[in-house]
Amino acid sequence: GGKVKKAVVSSPPSDSKKVKESLVEWKLECILSAGYAIHPRLTDKSVKVRTAAISAASCMFAPTRCEHYNASEDFVELTNTMASTVLWLLSNDSSASNRALAASGCAVTADSIPYIIQQIRDQDVKVREAALDALREKSNVESLTEDQKVEILKSGLTKRCPSTHAKTVELLCCSWMKHSKFDPISFLRTLNPVLNESVAESAARVIINVASTLDCESSCDMGVELVRKQFGAPEIRSFQECVLKKMTIVPEVEEDRKAEAGDEDEDLLDGGEKIGSVDPVKALFLRVKCALATESTTMSSVVKADTISDIISDIPTLCNLLNKHLDKLIEFNNGSTDNDDLDDDEAGAFEDDQNFICLQLIHMAESSELEEGSRRHFISIMRSMLSRLATPDDLVETCVKAMAAAHDTEAQFLQTISEILVDVEDDETFNHSSNNGLLIVRQMRAISILSIVLENISGHMMTNPILEGFRRHLEPAITSKNPIVRQHGVGCWSKFALLCDQDTVLERDMPLLLQIASQEEEIVDVRAQAALALCDLVLIHDKIHASDDDSATSHFDSFKK
Image 1 (cartoon, rainbow, N blue to C red):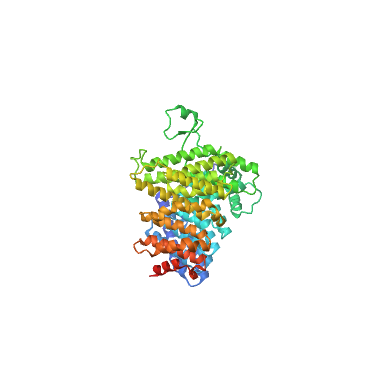
Image 2: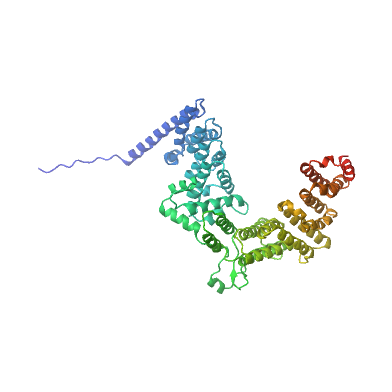
């Protein structure tokens, strides 16, 4: 009456393995057959056939589906051939929908990424969006080179197409920033802002704007809406906390660090407090943050002031920091510091970093809505920098423009420039091997300052006697024995002439420029500079060529010969 148990007979392990191998071989054979059939259809004359073939071919590139077949040489050869054809279609298919489909379906690899990036500039918006979506979904920031990231942002963050801009914002915030744990400084560092300032600034503006509006119920910015759809509440909080947290431009030094042996890279402020060096990337980010606060039309004046004060504690501290980095740069250029352990690339990078930091600090002070006391202090610092011959030429233009913005009137600005030019002639701190070399440096600095002033001054200021007195600083440059000084001197003189009335040009400027342009013994570069100035004057004053001035006519005839 007992129950009889049935014996369970299992197949040998070797038989099961053979069955699996046979199944894999059969699947591979089917996939190869399908691939061989699909491949010629990718270049079919019919748009609809190519559409179906591209969709089918995208399945061949899915790594999770085909990872078991990569050992097959036939499969690898087939997929490589199909991938090349799809990339060709990505750029050359006459159908925009097919190009978009190719961007979505192609494998994102080191070889295909340049082709996908190229399509961000496609004439059709759907193709551009598909290319950006492919980069966001199938790649991360580590798979892209610095140049590729810069090219993506430069092409994608365009005002001409709001949808392309929005997709680029989504890629930037939901993929690249997420990979950097929402740390803006860490991400911006991958763009190398010192060499790619404009692109890094655009990215920083996008990041700060998204963080500022991400928790709003609605936004007119399509990019913010796309980011909001991708992020959950925890990610939104984390993004905002990392981007909008309080940061100051003045590096803080912990008390325990002060108590240690000391850091050679720390200097004393006026109050005796130590500060460290500024990071170039942080300087850019905080400068952009300060500028956005100043430009904002939604912030109240109190919120603006608080935001800027969080970044810049006070202008004297910021100026002390600027002076510190300027001194480091000058010491480096003079060889006063021990840089023997740096190779050429490292030395160049150090110089670029210090230049970049100085520029960011100047721009930051300029956009901080200077009060009367801070404004006077800032103007004195700019004057000191311009009067100092050792100040690098790369900083001159920014200093002049910042000083112009800090003055209440153009007349006051011209008075300060006049005083700076006198200081330049009296500066004895610049070390040079010869007096003639020192004279050339002084002349070039005066020409550089005056050229920037003349490019930005209003035409009605030509009646100001101070501006007219600037010509005496150019007369020695035009007659200098150094051809480079003469060339730049003639160029600066022509900027004076462009602001003058026709009678003054005919009486003084035309004869001088014609004489220089017609001198056969003069070098070609100087004569060409004078000829360019003459062309500009003729375009502005249409009656000059009909002038009866005998001296000008004789010089003009000589110039034609």
